[in-house]
Image (cartoon, rainbow over all chains, first blue to last red; front, side):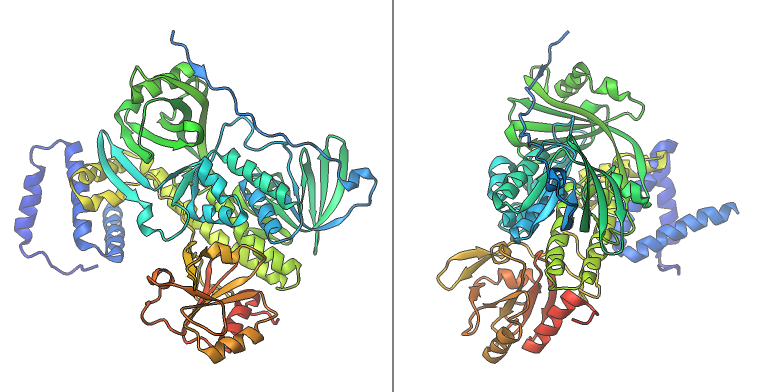
Length: 66
Length: 553
């Protein structure tokens, strides 16, 4: 799992992501995020990297609550 | 109110109770092999032993085939099971009676989102799957066992007590004409999910029960539908829940409907309620008759060790999984086929008792893998939280638009012959070898199972063997349970041809660069080892490992 910066235009990506959620209901936003996860996962295509990302995402959520 | 027709019940064979010697005043005997439970696993084992020329006692508390109160439980028989049945002599009968298929489609709503064709990976003489009511398989096995004439079949006989001893097991058997005691050197428990033997011994099963509720509705109707496995994740005609549609013998369709968890099984199995489901799926005008309506919830369990001293657990007594992918009955049949040849070699003194340890070492991980695979399908079909439902919904939507998401759609991964991990008997690990066709010099074809059919021998397939080594191997291995064949050309060995390289490729070899390599295949058609540049000494050592592991012969 690469945790060093690798997104060429971070602000541009973030802006696009936020824009994609505009006008969506909470349920639709959840659907969008889920669809995005699967699309991105397929771009990555490396099982261990994907599993590491899943674990790290969960840690991020749980640690944030601590 | 609409009228609903029921097909007349199947007329199944009934087998008589014959008083055994123990009830005719003879002293209790000790038998080498006693199997309890005449379901698919127990019958396969008894038939396999008989096919190898070995006697056993088979005890069953019923006097017919099938499961009491159920038209049929299992319906899908996988290629490895069909290959096993071919070797046992009932393969043709099963294929003729059943419905061969290889194609599966999965729908979400009205759209197809996933499909597979198992024929693409097959080099076997047997089709990827045959659908057939379970009782037919049992029926054909009983017929075959009776023809072979080596099995002491004891119907109407219930084992009420087992007492495991160091080198045997003492059993108490209840019959309509009284009870008796018998002893078994090896006891095989094939009594199914609720095994009283396992319960009496008190083994931990790690069991769990699902809340997901289903209702099988077996029907016969005139409307022509494709002979394919069709599944819906979220069928519009079943309130957005899953549905299975599959043909079996006698023109009977298995429709299996996922129900709301809070539904009353008595209500959902009423003919008028079941009939509504059929009409919602097939149209109001469809004419049909019911064969069987059976509500169920699935459960699972898995023993840690399939061997307990002199007691062996095969089939559902050892493991139960949810039905997705037909990994229940097929696994039981394959348990039996794994254990049969080992029991024969051990009880005839050709291998040590420790070979029987490899049964659990190979089959327990196979069952664990099946549990893992089926649990994932079950979870895809019954999401446990709103978040899971969102994930599944995203997969289904993506699958309608993009190929990459289709393999994520999981309505069951069909039963396979599981690989075995590396072990003292199988240092390279092992996988099944399909029942492919071999040609002899005159163009006559034989299958791998033909080579394995009689007796209990390993088969060594030696690609272009060097003459001297082949001759040395013939004399060095004469007393061991192995038949050697040359692939290509040999003066020393019977010759089989592989003109297209299908065999070599299936065995993981390059057809152009495998001269001198020997593939050692076990009596259960699993690859024991691949030996490049094989010599007689190397082959002998490899065979000893497959039988003795680290024990001294």
